[in-house]
Image (cartoon, rainbow, N blue to C red; front, side, top):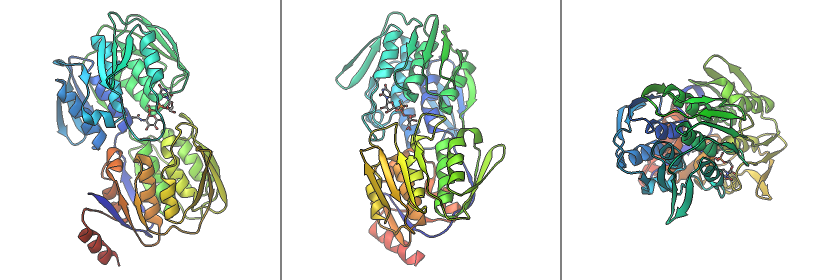
Length: 431
Ligand code: UD1
């Protein structure tokens, strides 16, 4: 089983190139299958969730050619099946985008109930509400979500909860519905905008993505295009916090600084220096970190996907900090592992972490509970005194391209190991 062996203590220093956004790529792949013409997509990240999604597409007749590591060709002209139920799709969240995409294109789809990280109950009621408002009949049977209709008609939909997934899924379906759809109380995340831009480049008529209200005038068909995915703001934010936690000096390159404003604001608040240029951000952590409070919120608020990385930084800051998770119910699973490394963090009421800063972490054997919690624990291990062995890294590989290699290039002592012998070798090497 693959693990990371880490010897902490080196400040991370240097430049790191940020990959394309996984959470934009997944819906854009589903959207690409909505046209019978060929689509080329660039800047795709080379991570496991992407492979799962592309394999699922191949299994139903979509032609998928990985032209290079970060470029793919997709042709959805010969889809023979609208039932998507591979084992891989049960484990990722993005598979539910086939529902909206195929409901729009074929007026029907059957997709296995989606999985993803275990960070709360993660209902899909708002997706189903949107599909029903467009005229679809939707049932859940034998573990599949089944949606179908004779005619998809534009509608006025108010989302009861701000949801990235539901906003995108309903937008996908409405793109090929008859007439006008208005979605209110939409998610405004950069990847919602990216999916809308992609669809518009295929001939869709979508206005308002990135605001609370999206207006979609249905079109009859979509055409081929060539498109580049936006940079991953969560990967970028993770490296920015890695700089803060290890007292380093890191420049994240190929980013859109505007997408990282809330992350930048918190880094400044805790005493880091942050310099922005057109497509890069430099974070220097020269001073001791200061305590603060933060609440996760939908964009442009502080992202829930950055909450564990923030907590890991605050647990080394002087004084008491409070982190409140308001998007998902169960997103502090990594805290038990952080405590094993010497962190003084108590979770109260399931949604609030009370953090008393400590001087240092100490290396330990730790198990990754989910994608972002896992990345945060690796950062803690990089700052810790001594060695850590990190288990269950498959979660991290789902969403971070070459995570340990990018960290090595910044000066981290981290290696992927498989056997006890590898671990011993690593320990001998790092002393
Ligand atoms: C996406 C991201 C995830 C990120 C999250 C919030 C992907 C593959 N994943 O997840 O990394 O943490 O956005 O930025 O893009 N909800 C409902 N009913 C619904 C839909 C959502 O109650 O029908 C709730 C969820 O349980 C959660 C909240 O709304 O409490 C936000 O969820 P949502 O924005 O939909 O997250 P995902 O799209 O699953």
